[in-house]
Length: 173
Image 1 (spheres, rainbow, N blue to C red):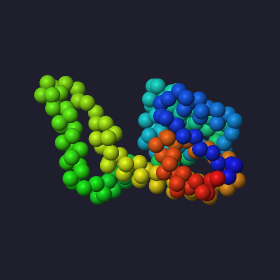
Image 2: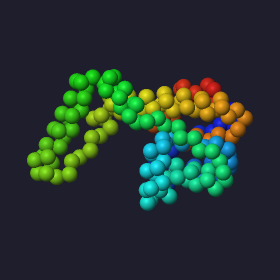
Image 3: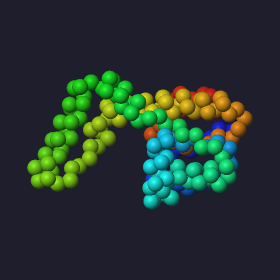
């Protein structure tokens, strides 16, 4: 569909911000779908460095040109509740143990703790991305169906590209 476009961003990167600005200027969408929920948007609007955000750029454009913003993301709590049921206690204990072992010296010295790497939480991270891809894809389809013939620009993180396109790619090509 010529009237539907996606911008896949790396959150917080200048190149992504510029890509969003370019798409907004060239495509002039009537509707802009962003990978946020209401709470996330409220946090963004209160954030002092918001000008660096590709989502804030889209929000400014929408306000300036009276375009519709669609918040595409689900409540994180829904995904986390499902996660409790899907990820077993064994995986959760393993993640906690990895965190404690990798931070043992820091814990004993009362220093700032090292964050877990993506590899250390991969079962959890994969599940969350998969669930969000599913929810985002459903929302993409809803927005397209409710707004046939209108120009729609979706802005999502690159981590969701494969999952979303696998689910809706056939429809938007």
